[in-house]
Length: 328
Image (cartoon, rainbow, N blue to C red; front, side, top):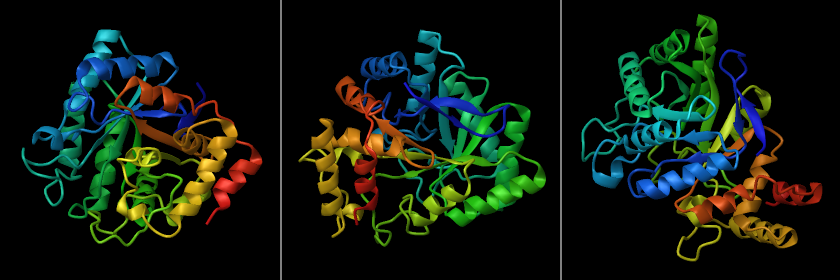
């Protein structure tokens, strides 16, 4: 397994595997036996970076989430897993009541919520320190300084290592990082957004995010990453839920536009040339990107995980990467 470093402070930075494992559905639609088997195989293959959230998977049973964190806690205890495995979690998007959504009804990012939710996540995960804690979605009802200070205090106290932001407007990320720097506090160092080889539209009316981005990594975010080499992008849903390879999984509406066929064609060409699957080409393209990208791929079976792991050592030629990068 290959590794890369996230974070810049020697006290909190971590070396993690270049392929992260998404645990969103573990403990809910993916049963415990299967979840454990996937986790065990991922670790056996050298994987060290697992992602979850305090609201996963509230929609599965009409609750508020927490099943994934709880399963990871049980798995850690049963396997004697320690600090060698980096577990990232998120807060801010947990529904306030069972049977509801977080849209317009999220716990938010007040200092009080940050502290209390982080403590509950630590208990569910069974850890003294959360390795990486994200602000899951924005909360514009709370002063940004309060959110920044709330997260920064947890790092200063040692109950959180690294901080990240997911699904935020880039100007809000930059403002938060500036506030943290001016206060001498830890700031966001890892950004989690949806990113894949296909390019999305940013004008879909069904977007649930205020800026209409659907959490996509667009040109502004990629430009920001190039300008800030200390930041890392964790790319969620890199395989678009199976849409690259499964006939029963159509391309999501925000990816269904005239630019998509040409990019699909190049992916298929490179897959044929390498003998790899299209999914593996997508993941390898991200892993070898010119700025730090860590694909975050879930798996509901060992077969899916094995396919994803096969991308780690897939070396694309300079010509193949140029064609994948330049297709319009």
